[in-house]
Image (cartoon, rainbow, N blue to C red):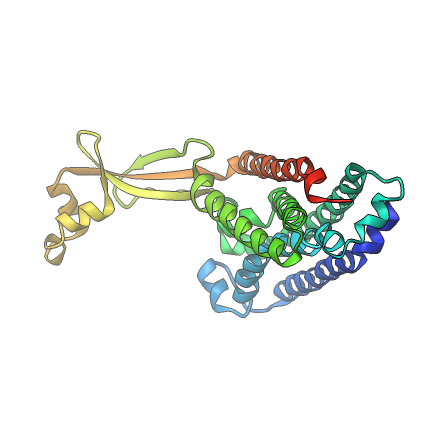
Length: 304
């Protein structure tokens, strides 16, 4: 069965290898050019003003959607092409069960995409390391968190599982692509945009107004606190004191409504691996769920 899966999917697997090789060349070249650059880039603003800003920004952005590309390449046509063209009948009528046909494709496809994702994650972390130091951005920031560690592997596995399951159930590679893109985007938006910052209760630090600085963490919110300990949002405070700012400094104006301290809510960087584990677990469960659904529908959706 391994040979048959290779014969059916060799173009897709070779495209995955090509994608990885292109990224390795781009990332390695960018790192070497950055290290050899004579101009200083000692903060994020300076980094963005140099020719390496696009490499850092666009590199992270495109790496965030690379798991989707890898999953589509290997998963969308894994079963749909066979069922659509009925070439699966040759295998299933020669002593191979539906379950073995499905399992072989899933295991080999998973192996290919996970190896590819692991290589990309390792190379990306190595290539961006010097730039990340200069950028000074938290490891929990969406760009850095999504392209390092084990999360890229989990996203790649989810994209593959969704594409393979959708292709089997719809019997159409095009439908599998559409479903996978929509599903992947929805899951990424929910996890990265809403759930990730609350995987663990955030930490809160208070201090003098203008004197609270979070180092080594992802800042989530800044607000003020009055003498009774009640929290007052920035917008509410500025809206109340709009006229005062025209004639007085900010601290004087804030004191007029009883604000005594500044409060910052953040997630510390030392929770990086805990967050990686939580998000990867969610994605693994989602991947398992869609694969189980496709396995349960084998007899109905794969006629012999």
